[in-house]
Image 1 (cartoon, rainbow, N blue to C red):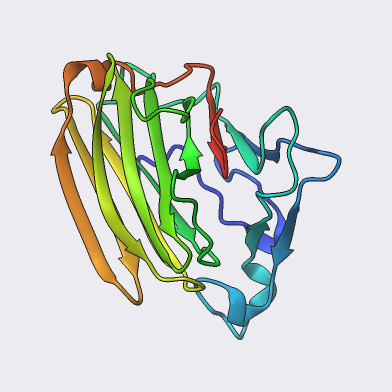
Image 2 (cartoon, rainbow, N blue to C red):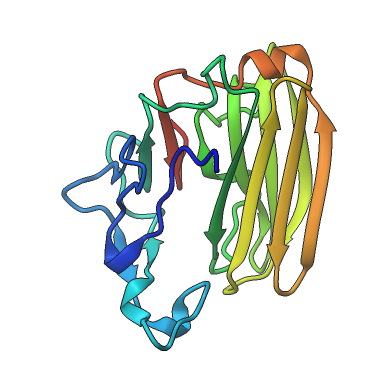
Length: 212
């Protein structure tokens, strides 16, 4: 099926079914994260087997280590962003926010230094104001950016987020399936500089809840 990494978050564990990556907290002593297993709190509810599904709740405002919060995906042996044999890839995940957003933006995921959207790499950021949050899908490189903005997120509701990069045809695709705002899709052409820089820091790391 072409799937490279897969984290089902079964029974409160972050294990890659493909066994080619790891998903661990930046701060291993005090990660600021808890596993949610109550069926009513999960993105897909299963009253029959509630223990089979879990979600990871991160406290990104408190727990930091070396200026990093949240988790890091180490995919050094399976980084599709830099693999020249991979023409296109998609990253998808379930996401829920409490509605507290920072106007200047905060990282949902990134393989780059997201202090500037122009920095090389790929990122999804959350911007806006409290209870008025939006996601932005960013690619940077060559002193510029190609970005898709304005994806509304409903507070305290699960939404499915996906970003796809077609390196061969130089296209960025963004998808957000939100129960309140509905399905939102968009597409944008990418400049050569952004395609060439999609690997970000090129060290096989992607931050979740922070940049790298």
